[in-house]
Image (cartoon, rainbow, N blue to C red):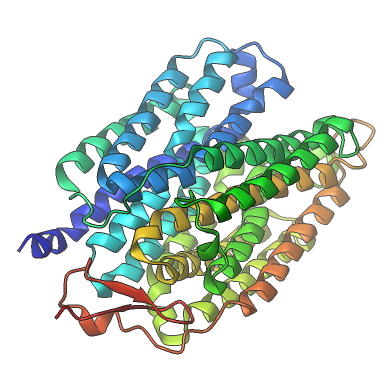
Length: 490
């Protein structure tokens, strides 16, 4: 009876999870177009204000897998509520910040919210009817990218109508509502992974992520050949090697390396890395491109609001396509959907690189991009969830999201280096810098298409529907190829 009650209210559970994920996604990008405004208001330098983004990125990279693991251990619902609470506290502190140091601390606290995605996937897998699982996972995965795109679209109107503080007040209100609703409406997960957090792997994971992301984010400022960047990259490699060795020897690993070596897991993670390179760098640099003064001969001189609207077709297309991607995957297979999404995304970056003379061309390019991203993101998330046992859903999906974030940092750093390689006399980038940069991002997505070919094809079509009348948390097993099948209870 309890299981049936959980399944009866799965739509309410989805609405609560979606609200929390949307708030986190908005905070990823709302501040990106208004960093100059924050810099001026907090009386700081351009180099320092970039840490408003970097601190959030670093914190989310560290806490995403950790919060997913804790949720698997002690209960996903209670950790989801705790994560939402941390996101609300960080947003409150950011809204009240009177100097950049407090703002950076607030963004670190907000980064704990990175755990919402693996926790949401885990709750969906535990609570949803089998026939609804893939669609829900795909919708939540799309919502992350949609929310990030909408954050850039909404930033301008919010700042114009109110001020930049409301970029944090509004998500705070959303997260408080989501936390309260989750506490009262989302049932606690029945699946647990007994154990404890292995802190040495957690410290090593944090260490190599911090070293890598600081090096990549600061490389355009310090120079790719600088000793600081080289030292951090070497440190990242050494710490990553030590982390893998410790995880392999640990009786209770933070992240199971055997799981990470599953063909369906590592191939999807590789695709996620390459998509992160393409997506987040586009989010960061397309608004800059259209805000460039018309005097350069290629810019549009757009306002913050106008530049954000360029990404609106992408957000709309991604959300619509994401909702139907699971049905398409059932017909042609998740691997094929990821491959098609990768190829469509490659076309969109090619359009941005070589057809950007008018705003209507940009709208078409971002609309095509939304179709490609929506297909690939939805299918990738479903494949990851299906490839691992239920007790590892949180940490596996958390690492997949984390790898996208790392890819985003790599892409933004590389894009910054390419765009600013040969500035004009007035210090602004040349058009060729953006052309080469968008072409480079398109190349990354083309490589993602080749990586998608490596994703294993499941020989057993979904048997999820076959046992749809059973509780969603019935015993599951993973068969070769990554298909999750349900065992009928005896």
